[in-house]
Length: 411
Image 1 (cartoon, rainbow, N blue to C red):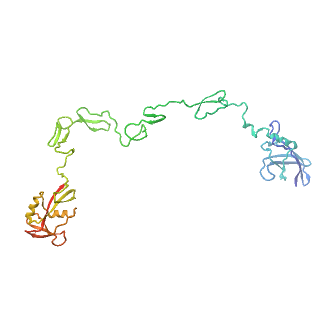
Image 2 (image 1 turned 45 degrees about the vertical axis):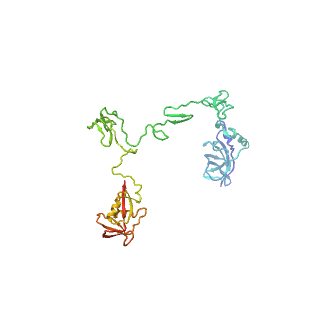
Image 3 (image 1 turned 90 degrees about the vertical axis):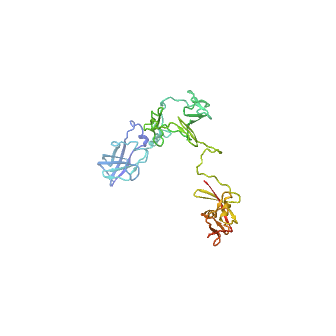
């Protein structure tokens, strides 16, 4: 079995390799004594050297193959002759060397250690840093910026509501002053000003508190503004054209004058005419009454009871009086006529007032006039219900009595 009896690898830390490239070569010498079954190897062999970051497993971070001649088991290698050993490979971290002679990989891997004075060289690893930062993190003492520099003054802010009035170019300090200046403002056309508040100077109708855009539109169709908007003397507008112009024509007609007729006043023979009702009598109303109008009845003659009703838009007042002890139909009729021009109540009138206020109750055995005056009469409640009417044929002596009615209507 092939094994390494000894190995000499004068490796140094990263600091040694981090020196200027022109001063420190990126190569290292390696001397090893290899035996096979206890006998030193001789002759030509291919030796492969690998650097790993772990004692076992993982991929190599650097590999190099060399043809060497072994004498009494000793082989001499110059590592980095083919693949340079840069500070990216030997960066100061732990490394292990793995050797392969021909096709045989030797084990175990051997840890790379420092030479005695190479440990001191590790101090140089920090020589290119300042406060742990590389040189690229700092600006050169002679660096410059575009523009001019203002020195850092002692007063760089203003107190309260003061504003910066000026900056001292020598000291860099600011000069403060009350904010009493500034531009002045005034309201232009379409605006009003109250102190520091500006408002739109609204005009015309409307209550909106916003202004319309100059290109705003309204719902509907706009008519263009025409060039002909008035008619010549003696002509009148007859139509509005789509162009916005008016169409004019002479007035057609033969009315020469307007004359007030019966019941009217006014009129003229030229220009505009005005007619009015020729009111007469008392009253101050400026309107005319309809020909079939009526006036309200507020009371009936004394001894008469008033019964009011409205039907089909007609209001009616029936004044009714019971006529006791009339000898017959003729006497009763004459008695009613002499009393406020009343007449004997008809069957229809009695029917109307029966359901009206004040409550009306038919008198027992009272007679109602018929329309023909032939003494064919109806007598009340002689049989059946008290508000019934019984026909008794022709009579000459009623004995009990009649009803007188006076009927008035208004609209």
